[in-house]
Picture 1: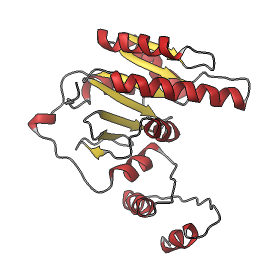
Picture 2: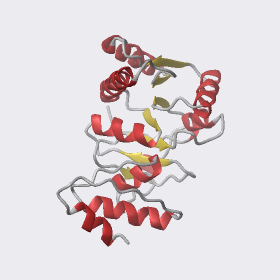
Picture 3: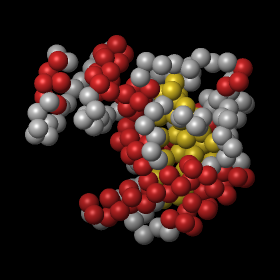
Picture 4: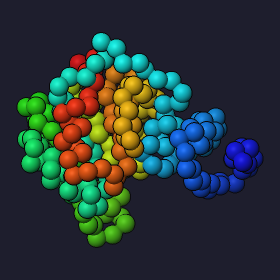
Length: 231
C-alpha cells in the first residue's frame, strides 16, 4: 500500500524502502508518491527516475521540435557490462567517436576540452568509468571525475548535442550534479528508453545500462534527437 510510504517517511529515523512494479501504471503511481514526499530520495532504473522527474506532463511533437536526420551524442556511461561495451564498439565502428575513460587520475580540464572539441567537429563523445578499479576509494574518485567532466561538458556542449545517460544510478548522479531536477517528455516513445527535455531545452535520453541491441547507440545517434533551442 502506498499509504505505508507516507507512514514510513514521516518517521525521524532514516528508512530504506524497496519496491518492485510490473506495469507502467504501477510505475507511474510509485513515481507520483515519490514526488509527493519532499524528504524522499529516489533511486532505481533509468525509466523509473525519468518518470519521477517528468511527472504527468508531456510535450507534444510539433514542427518546432521535430527531429533532424542526425544528432551528436554525448554519452555518459556508468556501467561497464558486456552489453554496454558491445554497443560502444558498434558506435565507434559506425561514426567518428571520441571515447574517454574517467580514471581517478584523469585531468578534468584536458578531458573537457577534448570532449568539446570532438562535439564541435560533429563527432560523438563518450565518457565512462574504468572497467576495473583497485578499491572503493578509487571508484568514488573516478565517479567524481566522471560527474565533474560530464557537468562542465554538458554546460558548454553545442545545441545539437543529445545527452545519453546509461544506467539509472548514472542518470540520477549526473542530473543531480548538473542541477537538473525537472524534465519533460518529448513525445517520442521507445521501449525501455525515456526521451526527455531539460527546462533549457536540452534533449536527454536515459536507458537501463544493460538494455538494447549492439546497434542501439548508433541508432539513437541517427534517428532519435529532437532539435534543441540551446545555443
